[in-house]
Amino acid sequence: MAQAVAFSWIVAVKDEKENMAPLIDEIASAMQGRDPATYEVLFIDDGSSDGTELELARLKSQLPALRVLVHGRNLGKSAALRTGIRAARHSVIVTMDGDGQNDPADVHTMLAPFAQHEANLGIVAGQRIKREDTFAKRMASKIANRVRRWLLSDGTRDSVCGWKAMPRDLFLRLPYFDNMHRFLIALTMREGYAVRLIDVRDRRRLHGRSKYTNWGRLVVGVPDLLGVAWLMRRFRGSVEAREL
Image (cartoon, rainbow, N blue to C red; front, side):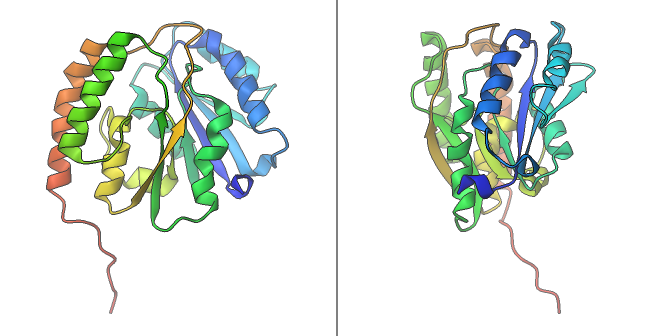
């Protein structure tokens, strides 16, 4: 049924040259047999300095559905995702991390609720079953998720998983700020839409290094979390207007 949902696959990357060829190959395998008119794959190079841009350009011949957008400087993951989503041609968007830790085969699982036309569905969010990260990152994430759930009541154990699927127009209506991708579930709930949480696999990073540190996440994460908590409380909810 997921084959019937036309979608745009959005992947933000920075300095991931070595991961691009195997990831594109896996995406091509996941899309094998699918009508090319029903999907596109957008990679947004967010100011890479390792040749990721050139590698993606080379790989376009291996995946005709691939489109490559390039930021002249690093703006951050949320900005890169928004660039891709604004350029997307389909009404449903699916985001995935570009470091190889997300398995492209899970895209069908992410699209299934849209194929089933679940009522008032706003976002399908992946939750990693087993984190393939260092102990320090797992513990920091566990603590951060508990604090976030307490403040936002978003009901997810893994808000930063790269897998998200949602209507394109809904994403573009949400209040934008840097690092908003960490709060898409709460922001979607704020608008009155339903959330569907789905378990997905996590894999070990084979090439390159993570762009995030625990300290870096803490410095930007606390003000962002408090800001989103304020947004949640200063909103009376959406309503459909009736024209007379």
